[in-house]
Image (cartoon, rainbow, N blue to C red):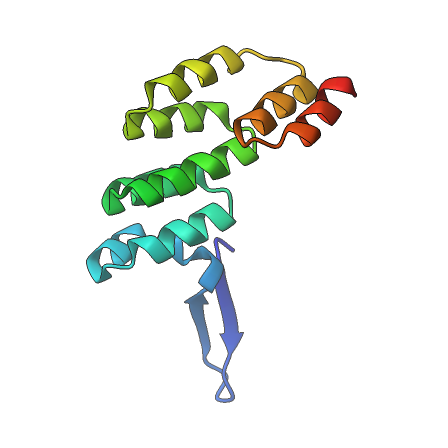
Amino acid sequence: HGGRDWVQTNTGKIISDTLRTHQHMLLQGFRRHGMEVQGLTQALDLNNFTVAFELAKAVDSEDAWKTLGKKALRVLNIEMAIRVYTMLGNAAMVMTLKRLADVADLELLKGHVCMLFHEFEKAQRHFTS
């Protein structure tokens, strides 16, 4: 439940612990212990963009923002990508993404995102399918 692991000890006592994959949810703990980058990585692994955005704000490095932006694009979370590239101050990317935000055809959207990553052959496959 909620990323918690419950086990019974040899003495019959029941204890719980937070699973490693859900530790990013302990946002305040990461901030308190200076582990924002680790939390950001875990949040991205789980596609938890709300937490990842907050941790990227805490880290506030260009690498953290770019990593978050690329992951958002890879999973076609255009709204999050717009927020991230706005934080990076990349106006050209924001304008491009705003044009893509209303694309309803999934294959067309995938093709455009592939173009942003310079994956032209992959983009062509999406455009022609």
